[in-house]
Amino acid sequence: MFKLTQYFSTKATPQSQPIPGSKQIPNSAGGYTWSVDDWVQLDRFLILGSEGGTYYISEQKLSIDNAEALVRCLAADGPRVIARIVEISEAGRAPKNDPAIFALALAAKLGDDATRKAAYAALPKVCRIGTHLMHFAEYAQAFGGWGRGMRKAVAGWFNARPADELALQLVKYQARDGWSTRDLLRLAHPRAASPSHDRLFAWVTKGTLPEGAATDPALSLLCAKDALARLSKPREAANVIRTHRVPREAVPTELLTHAEVWEALLADMPVTAMIRNLATMTRVGLLTPGANATKTVVARLGDNTRLAKARIHPVAVLAALLTYKSGRGARGSSTWSPIAQLVDALDGAFYATFKSVEPSGKRMLLALDVSGSMGWGTVAGVPGLTPRVGSAAMSLVTAATEREHTIVGFSTDLVRLTISPRQRLDDVVAAIDRIPMGGTDCAQPMIWAQQQKVDVDTFVVYTDNETWAGSVHPAQALRAYRQARGIPAKLVVVGMTSNGFTIADPNDAGMLDVVGFDTATPPVISDFARA
Ligand code: CA
Image (tube, rainbow, N blue to C red; front, side):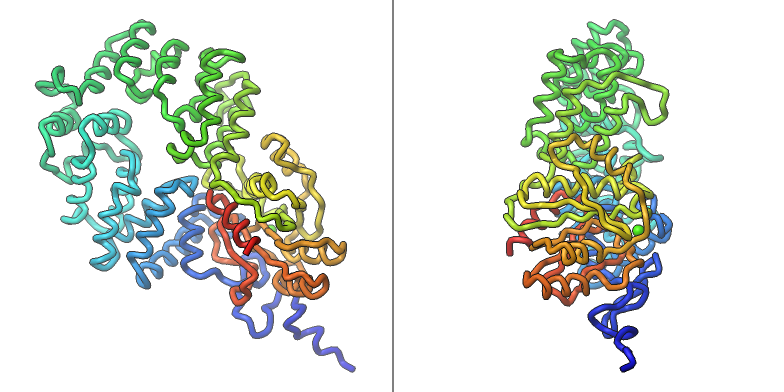
């Protein structure tokens, strides 16, 4: 008999060809996968962005592909897009807020009436600080000018917050990326909501303290900033900082070399700023092993409520950990001696910044794509944080809660990995970096489990979905596994880049697409495994 089915079968098809009868499309690596639907693509974009592109796709093309999916979603259901943007941005689920701001600006300019209205109403929820608002203005500029809706929304942003809160925003974020609050006020031209607002606007536009500033409590921070500019003694500066809860942005650079000044700043420092300034505070001698300030920082990093309130994202923690541990700044000019207690505290904070997970109790195979393409580029533009390293860190969050897990790495072959949540993340990163890279066969985890007779309820594959090297498709390998082991095994695909591909068969309810580095992903994995 001539074995025609070796060339044409729905059960075993080489990845270089589409499964007969399926809607598979070519991915960027020469293999066939499915495309995710536009709403999944929107999630990937909002969470992972397109900065830096991928191994296969240029930043430009990836950005255009994602924006086009966004435009299609807007045409289908604009208000649903706005709701999604707000949901992801407000919950701090994404490492960066820029994709959400971009999507909001595009919707505000190109959406239908209902969408535009919803977009402007969502402005203060998505643009929570001055920098966000300036980024919104920059993005919106690409899609149109300053119409009435835009002026009203930006004016509202300034007027809606209490004057003392607005003062803090104005002091912290005077100018960013070619925009200043002065530009925004000039274009939006708001009528001040109160005499204090009026004085604040005057300070922004004229650059000097307005009449009545000294007696207006809402302007006390501005007065303190003014006073600091004339002080050179660290002790005096520290007193002003403490009394008026002055943020770092309002302190002259010359004063930022003193431990005393940083100690005063630390008293009221937001967690985001604290994480970013660990190296500086170590270098100036405030943070030393066993010091009170070190204890304060460790306690705050261990305070889950505080971390959640500040919307600290695990990628920010991981980036801080990798930089701080290295003892050297990105440009290599500054160095410090990292304090082990702080590195450990950052390690703990990484796990705490994900949404809490109710373990499913299922048998899980956590499979990391360690192929060449995963070692290229960055997650959310963080230096050194490749999708490969990122997926290892992600997998540990699930490993920390699911007792019955095995972690493997695959390219064209499969290796068992000995990484564990009990190791510190920087050690895990180093271990992952040592694994040799190869081609990509995303069917390997299922093939391996079948051959080795390993019982798995849920396969979790962390990948960029650029699979090409295998002789069967991952979805086919999963169905073969189910049949061979008699287990209705599921597959969760954790997309680590914002391309539009997936190895999950959209017509199989036992396969699910989720987004890497979405803080909500670990609980979704467990819920899907449990169902
Ligand atoms: Ca690859």
